[in-house]
Image (cartoon, rainbow over all chains, first blue to last red):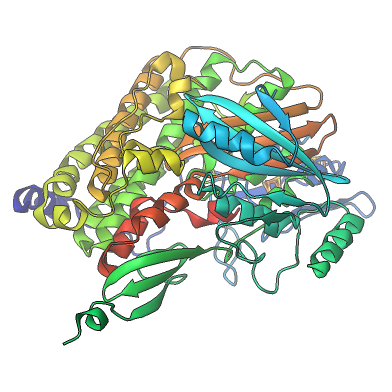
Length: 107
Length: 128
Length: 366
Ligand code: SF4
Ligand code: SF4
């Protein structure tokens, strides 16, 4: 039992720790990660399709006044709204939101 | 679609299920569906990857015979149905008195569909 | 002096859980002890009942895919898969071949990370911290693969009715295959420790024996049943692309904690094999078909999760919302088996035995 672990030990010494010193070192997400939702407000026509389809009820869209609001605490970052938006106005950014209380959004 | 469904009455439920036990049927679970005025109970069985079901319809408020004396593993799911729907099982080997799946302060029979039915289920339970 | 009185030890009742250092799941067991021996165990759940089945009657059948994925924080994809397959059967949807292969890929990644999570927790339960770290480092690689391919570590959200929502490029397939090779090297380093080490064996061999007959009668599923010699693996029925890939259930016959560990360890390698096969032979086709109309009728769909068989009963009435969604998760089926093997064991073995069925209480309660 000692021997297989010796090999692991040497490998670990060579490779260094598997963890990072968060928050000083932040892990870069993979491209295509669903981190958080953004709306290119210029393209949005406030049709409300995204709000009706959202499984978590995280979106509220009103036509007059033209408002699109996301409740980040409700959003489960599923990306369904991105799929159904007729104007392709929504997209997912790979960075996750920062913990609440901190500055929101890195991307 | 569901195949191999046997419809039985509440009286013959225990006999039907007791006949299945020695034939190597595995009890998968019990599903309760709120059918308005009735409870629809579906007992799911498996043998060699083949599903079969036993369906019982009982009027709400009636007592359903428990099969936990035949399939010991059914006791947990019957307690769950008792909690979530307010169906009463008679002859449960382990009875949690409606506090298996739900906390003490949780509402009773939350899965019952209409508020009217919910009230009826509550009334049924008061009587007991 | 009087044997009759000294031979009936006093009974003690010990509450085990819901907060317990080795069990991150809120499972409460009421243990009746005689000395150090358990004579009776009674479970109490209900600490995290979330009413997902109820909510599923309110959301429409498309939204339910995302909701039901949240039944379990480990085998999320497989829950969505079971649900989607059920709806597809109701609506007569033919899923394209590539989507079926991709479903296997994500299912097996889920299985890999679930088994690694469990192995790590097991090592932690008997106090082998460094092994726990090694195993979880390997698990992190699987999570990375999931993020690379699906865009999230746990809630993959890639399954949809009629197919999958993401495709893999040839480059990504290569990345995953390379990742799997690395993973296998890591497995080869810690697996001998798990299965050969004397202290590990001491804690697992002969502990918590579930006989084949008990497993059958109590309706055990998954690795718990397979470790007692029952060849029950729903993947044999050939859903998704498992029919083309071929699955032979992993079986052990001893029925003790060690056998359950061996089954899961061997399934790690089985998953690697299935993943490689699926990735190499993935056919070219669209990844989803458009679904029109509303589901109607009743269906029961079963698939194999890391913990065993999950059953979905769906009842639809031709509207956008379903009349009833019922989920029977594998841990619910394995709880009676756990209660059968606990009596007669030592109190010190309770955590390991409880862990050996791989309990997932949050999905048990839904
Ligand atoms: S669906 Fe698209 S266009 Fe319509 S309100 Fe939502 S973001 Fe705007
Ligand atoms: S990502 Fe999902 S949960 Fe979040 S707003 Fe879009 S649809 Fe709603």
